[in-house]
Image (cartoon, rainbow, N blue to C red):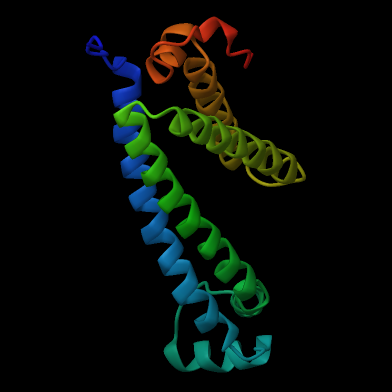
Length: 178
């Protein structure tokens, strides 16, 4: 008879966070998939068009150039919203599936969690590189925090006691990951 395995507390915490993150990803992705085509319907607006509208509304301290530029940028990015939304939905579903496997102690889920974590690390590195080209420090700081958190998660998943939970009956030290 096989002894009862005790799930490491960190795996339970990762499971809870994985479910929450998966649900948030699905909700945000769905919103982006819906909003992307709406943004694509915007027609090109000129500063004059916006100035005419603002003149009728008597709004103080509103820059018509900034509004026109923002609306035109939304139209330009509408396809990106849609594609990124699809990615978020897929990532959310994968996160929930992998989380279920983690909580059940499935070996495939450990590999899935490592792969999702590595993808998240790479994504944060890309964001840091892109934002480093002149965007506010708060955004870069958020990406650095995300990079650090995913790095800690990867380190935790590769610890011997965590790996042994997923490969009961096998020698986890032979699982050369890191």
